Length: 81
Picture (spheres, rainbow, N blue to C red):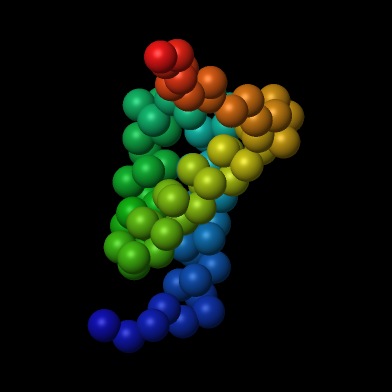
């Protein structure tokens, strides 16, 4: 498989952006964005789909940490003997 050319990359990025916009608008409800998901998967190589999906998850997590902060877990309590 050859690497996507400039036109194919732009098409892929465009469908990715449309999908992400739909997911943002619908509070990440994937069922509401099924049409955009199918277009995204059809326009991009499978590895890119996998990468961009992980990238979105990371960016959403990062945004949450920046707005809500990080609260470490209490962990197990030490027993006193």
